[in-house]
Length: 168
Ligand code: RP5
Image (cartoon, rainbow, N blue to C red; front, side):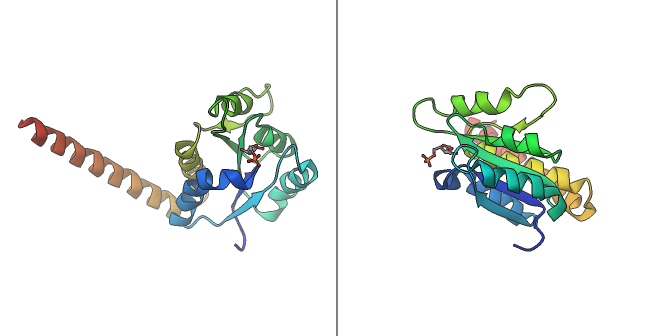
C-alpha cells in the first residue's frame, strides 16, 4: 500500500488471523497501512531497521502483535518515538497472559500502549491508531464520531429488544 500511515508488525504468520480485525478497522476508515511479519527474536535486524526507518517513511503509529515472551513492541519502542501499540497474542500454554505481562510491564521512559489479549485487542489497536491519526485528519475524526453515534444506536436497539423480551 502506498504511503502507509500505520505500520503493523507481527511476530509470526500464526498471528495473522488474530490481527485481521485490526487491518479491517484501518481499511474501513481509509487509513493506509503496511503489514509485515518480523520477529524481535528471530529477525531482530529486520525489526530494528523497520523501527528506525518508520518515521522518515511517514508512518505515524506502529502496532506490534506478538505472543509468548512478547518483546516486539518493547524493542520497536526502543528505536523510535512514534507511538507504539502492543497487542498480546493468545498462545497455547499461558493463553496470552505471558504476552500481556511482557508488553504491559515496560520500564519507565519507553512506553508501549498495551491492548487486551487477542482479537478484541487487535480491533482496539486499529481504532486507537485511527484516533491518533485523527488528531491530524479532520475527515477521519468525523468518521470516527459517526461510528460512535452508530454504536450508541446499536446499544439503544439492544436495550429495546431486552425490554421487549421482559414484556416491559
Ligand atoms: C511469537 O511467538 C509470535 O508473535 C507468535 O505469537 C508466537 C509463536 O510463533 P510461531 O511459533 O507460531 O511462529 O514470536
